[in-house]
Amino acid sequence: MEKFYSTLPSIPVNLRMNKTKAGFENWRHSIGHGGINKYPLPPAVTKGLAALKPRLVRTFIQEYFNIYPTHDTFNWTDLDPYMESLAASGGKVVAAITIKPKPLFSEVNQDVIIPNDVAEWQRVVEALVNRYSVEKPIVTHWEVGNEMDMGEPGGCPYRTQEPDVYNAYYRITVEAVLRAFPGAKVGGPVLAVPQHPMMEGLIKYCAETGVPLDFVSWHGYSDDPQYFVRCMTHVKALLDKYFPGKKIETMVTEFSKWFHDGKVEDAEMDGLRSATVAASVMDMADAGVDWTFYYHIWDQVLVSGQFAPFFSPGGVDDMMTYWNKTPCNFGLFDVCGKARPIYYMYKLLAEMAGAECEAESGAADIRVKGVVDDSGTARVMLVNYDQHHSRDVLAALDFNGVGDGFKLLTIHRVDGNSRVDGELLVPVERRYTQVAAEYSEREFFCQVYLPANSVALVTLERVMEEDMLASYG
Image 1: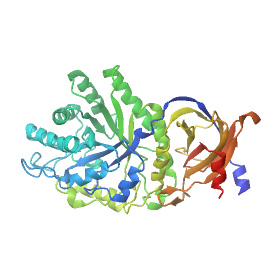
Image 2: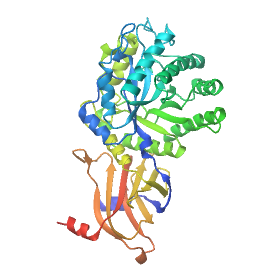
Image 3: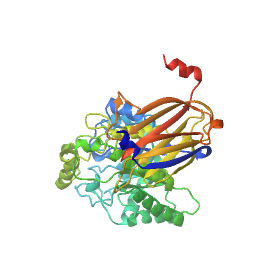
Image 4: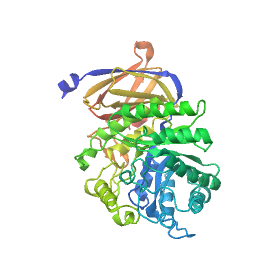
């Protein structure tokens, strides 16, 4: 084995921990959920989500909650526990409005967008927003629709290709949202493909009419992290064109790696999804996106009877295929609540709090972020990912500006060999060391093994000599 490691490519990674800029806002990269059934998160999943310390969690409120079964009648029986399970994470919620109440949409037809009674629709939306932004202060952001450019294949009962149609639906909906809760943030168009004309259509419409637009949102599934950057560049250009000098937030409210054949659980237990997603998060952060929401928290069983009242038979069958027959296996937790490696990747990301330092990698496929917190602890996140050919490497980390003294070096890694102890990821290395810059040209350096498609967190924490000695027992 020694010969194997010694022959690996060595990639230089330079870290200047004393040259920092604004804080790395790791909390802007969160999780989304919803669209499969009406069941709330189980307690173990809620606890796991809370450990990620989310500030925002995204969901969509689907028609199977049946909040408006008949005229002038509201039913919160199913939606209350669902929303409360998300709120138990400690974060607020971005909620997409995708309900299609039977009293306002008499036929099952995804191409019918505008309700048969606009005033009654607005009363329903006002009641929804009052329930979850006022009575229960859970939702701060209301998103209008969900992948209307796809319709049922995107998981929701609306489909249109016409910007004017979406804009009309957006206007009547946000009017009601803001009457119920003037402090709400509102946005859309929640596209599967942000290059669709409905993106420019909404931005232009709001700029010209003054209809409120606090954020624009879209989705993305790709193995190419730069795909997400291209999407961001496209949307930012539209915002600069129609809202020059004004801040409109950008939200990728669903994203993951691409859908592939071979949908077996074994595929989710290696490091590929974790590395793909981590690389995409890093590239989106560098591109200036405001929020990302990995989809999703927890895999579930799709219940056909919950969809049948508002989906076509073919749409129900497609959803059954996606989630029951050859499931997508996107969840941080599997159907039975077991954490997958992607969950531990997000736990590592949750540790990346502090001022971002200068960090450079000697290879494009080895991404790096470094932060320093107020206690002087340095953390470095490394992602080894290439879309076409990932390789095993040694990362040669060269630290500058970490300060003299005894340190505790800890390395965690997410890959196909990750080990956990309860809810904790077991470190692959943990050792004490000393930094004494006066005796060396290089203040501190170490090597980190990065197998293909892996994510690592390196922590260099200051310790007192007496604490170090006491730990030896």
